[in-house]
Image (tube, rainbow, N blue to C red; front, side, top):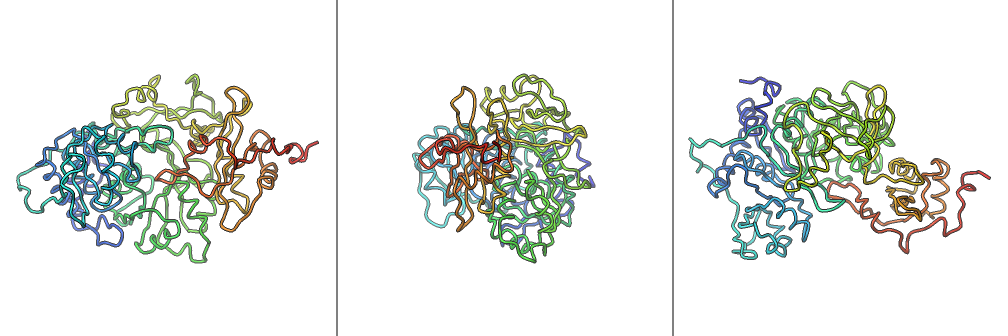
Length: 547
């Protein structure tokens, strides 16, 4: 019997093996508590996942089949993921905020014949069902009202896996480490969502990296409020808990005003948070007892450098910054015992990956300190995504010159510390200068009236050149004139970074993980509510105190 997840050989990295092992190691230990419900034990979770696998098997689901799930966070959503993977099938969780064309695109991309949907989402699904030619059956859970017999000629039935009917001799087919376990959809901020193929080995390694990087043990309680159609809650929290025996407290959704209370209520010792979520938490009014929790560490991607030091002080936690993406796991970790380095996402885990910073135009490696594109490749087979499902063009574009091109930019210093700068798509190029939107946003967010900001490039009067447009959301009851903000920025930013355009918005457009959708801000261009310093006759040199 293996004593630790470290005893699993790479060829054994699959969810069915891990789930069976953990249920044997600590069968009665609490594993998964959703919202305020009692926790499932590891043994109970496996038994229920096995029942789901048997039920789907009886419906004809086999290894390699894609099963779409369309639901929010719940205990059942986790067990569905497990049950589908136990069969060697591939789960394709779809963002429950999708509707219309994005929903149709996701279902059609994976050619799912079966969808398991939450009853509350049937009104969203119904108008699109006819445009899903491969979908043959809809199974519905959490139903509290009579179900329709069919939607757009597709039979509808309740999803009710019977307990106790599974033959004792039945064994799950399981999977190889190289088999696909999931297809996870990108946020779709720059075009139709791509389906990232995730292997069993890739999911295991992400969980192992999280367990090691966050020093998770069986004594930990992991608070997670991220949506389950993304990699972080699945692999960094839930799968990491399977490896270590930790308990997961899964919430329905993220809420900044409720975050601290929820952390306290569940007794969390560890959590995760993307940069925007941490900024929202930090923007809540400070209280003297903010650090009065059991929480000791939080995984961050990124850890916004303008709040990092104060966040650790205020909440009494250690922030462990990382860099990663669904396609390549989390190659970069801030070593746990190293002190905070605001702005750095840590060091590359060189036992697993080769990593370079290259010129995005030529793919030539750049020297230390130069900003370029992050590229990497694995040192073991199957530990990063093999590509995008049914999208060979996107796969070939990403896999180029034997390296996976991430689309993220940054640099690595002479000591091996990695610094993320921006998505290449968010890069602003003004008068031959490459500008990081992050630097402009940090400067803007320092103004007392600014709640949050986003800088984007919009076409200037020159070919292949941008002017800077800054979009700003003000704090409640705050007032701010664009000229006042511009004067403030002119004192802290170099000339080429000072925005030409300022637009004050009631709220930012966001993805389900609360990332600002900069593609919408760029696409909106210059409108009637956009203030233009040139049209206003404002000279930067005078604002900057130069003659």
